[in-house]
Amino acid sequence: MKEAFIFETIRTARAASDEDGSLKSMKAIDLVTPLLKSILDKNNLSKNAIDEVILGCAIQKEEQGRHLALALSTSVGLHQHASVSTVNKGRASAFEAIHLAATKVMTNHSKLNLAV
Image (cartoon, rainbow, N blue to C red; front, side, top):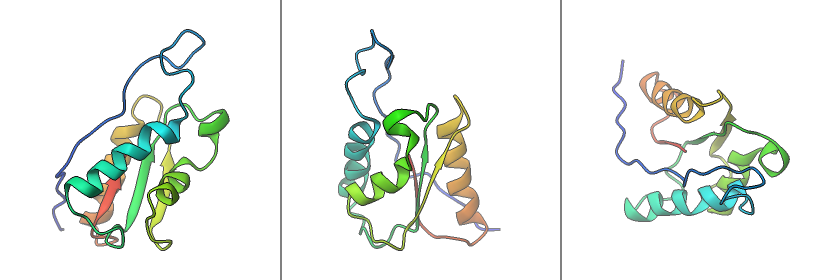
Protein backbone atom coordinates (compact mmCIF):
# COMPACT_ATOMS: atom_id res chain seq x y z
CA MET A 1 0.00 0.00 0.00
CA LYS A 2 1.25 3.50 -0.84
CA GLU A 3 1.96 6.11 1.79
CA ALA A 4 0.04 9.38 1.93
CA PHE A 5 1.63 12.59 3.16
CA ILE A 6 0.17 15.80 4.52
CA PHE A 7 2.35 18.62 3.24
CA GLU A 8 0.33 21.70 4.13
CA THR A 9 -2.16 22.59 6.84
CA ILE A 10 -4.40 25.60 7.18
CA ARG A 11 -7.83 26.16 8.68
CA THR A 12 -10.64 28.67 8.62
CA ALA A 13 -11.29 31.12 11.38
CA ARG A 14 -13.35 29.60 14.16
CA ALA A 15 -16.17 31.55 15.76
CA ALA A 16 -19.84 31.19 16.45
CA SER A 17 -22.00 31.60 13.38
CA ASP A 18 -25.24 32.18 15.29
CA GLU A 19 -26.99 35.56 15.68
CA ASP A 20 -24.32 36.87 18.06
CA GLY A 21 -21.30 35.33 16.35
CA SER A 22 -18.54 37.31 14.70
CA LEU A 23 -18.85 35.25 11.50
CA LYS A 24 -22.62 35.50 11.16
CA SER A 25 -22.43 37.62 7.99
CA MET A 26 -19.79 35.46 6.26
CA LYS A 27 -20.65 32.76 3.77
CA ALA A 28 -18.79 29.48 4.10
CA ILE A 29 -17.49 29.77 0.54
CA ASP A 30 -15.94 33.13 1.44
CA LEU A 31 -14.09 31.49 4.34
CA VAL A 32 -12.66 28.52 2.45
CA THR A 33 -11.87 30.00 -0.97
CA PRO A 34 -8.88 32.06 0.28
CA LEU A 35 -7.54 28.96 2.05
CA LEU A 36 -7.56 26.84 -1.09
CA LYS A 37 -6.06 29.65 -3.18
CA SER A 38 -3.33 30.05 -0.57
CA ILE A 39 -2.47 26.34 -0.65
CA LEU A 40 -2.30 26.32 -4.45
CA ASP A 41 -0.18 29.49 -4.63
CA LYS A 42 2.14 28.75 -1.72
CA ASN A 43 2.98 25.29 -3.06
CA ASN A 44 3.00 26.28 -6.74
CA LEU A 45 0.42 23.60 -7.54
CA SER A 46 -1.14 23.40 -10.96
CA LYS A 47 -4.92 23.53 -10.83
CA ASN A 48 -4.88 20.61 -13.27
CA ALA A 49 -2.88 18.42 -10.85
CA ILE A 50 -5.65 18.20 -8.25
CA ASP A 51 -7.54 14.92 -8.41
CA GLU A 52 -10.10 15.65 -5.71
CA VAL A 53 -11.23 18.27 -3.23
CA ILE A 54 -12.85 16.88 -0.09
CA LEU A 55 -14.43 19.49 2.13
CA GLY A 56 -15.50 18.87 5.72
CA CYS A 57 -18.53 20.96 6.67
CA ALA A 58 -20.18 20.26 10.02
CA ILE A 59 -23.24 22.46 9.68
CA GLN A 60 -24.80 22.16 6.25
CA LYS A 61 -27.67 24.62 6.21
CA GLU A 62 -28.73 27.58 4.09
CA GLU A 63 -25.73 28.62 1.93
CA GLN A 64 -23.69 25.72 3.29
CA GLY A 65 -26.43 23.23 2.46
CA ARG A 66 -25.55 23.21 -1.19
CA HIS A 67 -22.62 21.29 -2.62
CA LEU A 68 -19.97 23.50 -1.03
CA ALA A 69 -16.99 21.52 -2.37
CA LEU A 70 -18.24 22.00 -5.93
CA ALA A 71 -18.69 25.74 -5.37
CA LEU A 72 -15.18 25.90 -3.88
CA SER A 73 -13.63 24.01 -6.77
CA THR A 74 -15.34 26.31 -9.26
CA SER A 75 -14.43 29.48 -7.36
CA VAL A 76 -10.70 28.75 -7.53
CA GLY A 77 -10.82 27.52 -11.12
CA LEU A 78 -9.92 23.86 -10.71
CA HIS A 79 -10.36 21.78 -13.85
CA GLN A 80 -13.81 20.30 -14.28
CA HIS A 81 -12.53 16.72 -14.05
CA ALA A 82 -11.47 17.09 -10.41
CA SER A 83 -13.79 15.13 -8.16
CA VAL A 84 -15.41 17.01 -5.30
CA SER A 85 -17.02 15.80 -2.09
CA THR A 86 -18.58 17.55 0.87
CA VAL A 87 -18.62 15.43 4.03
CA ASN A 88 -20.44 15.94 7.29
CA LYS A 89 -19.28 14.03 10.35
CA GLY A 90 -20.25 16.67 12.85
CA ARG A 91 -17.25 18.03 14.71
CA ALA A 92 -15.02 15.46 13.01
CA SER A 93 -15.82 16.64 9.45
CA ALA A 94 -12.31 17.98 8.76
CA PHE A 95 -10.73 14.78 10.10
CA GLU A 96 -13.00 12.71 7.87
CA ALA A 97 -11.99 14.81 4.86
CA ILE A 98 -8.31 14.19 5.65
CA HIS A 99 -8.93 10.49 6.18
CA LEU A 100 -10.77 10.11 2.86
CA ALA A 101 -8.11 12.07 0.96
CA ALA A 102 -5.31 9.94 2.41
CA THR A 103 -7.17 6.67 1.85
CA LYS A 104 -7.74 7.49 -1.83
CA VAL A 105 -4.02 8.14 -2.31
CA MET A 106 -3.01 5.01 -0.41
CA THR A 107 -5.35 2.83 -2.48
CA ASN A 108 -4.22 4.28 -5.83
CA HIS A 109 -7.50 6.04 -6.55
CA SER A 110 -5.76 9.39 -6.84
CA LYS A 111 -2.38 11.10 -6.55
CA LEU A 112 -3.09 14.57 -5.18
CA ASN A 113 -6.11 15.47 -3.07
CA LEU A 114 -6.97 18.54 -1.08
CA ALA A 115 -8.81 18.08 2.20
CA VAL A 116 -10.31 21.32 3.42
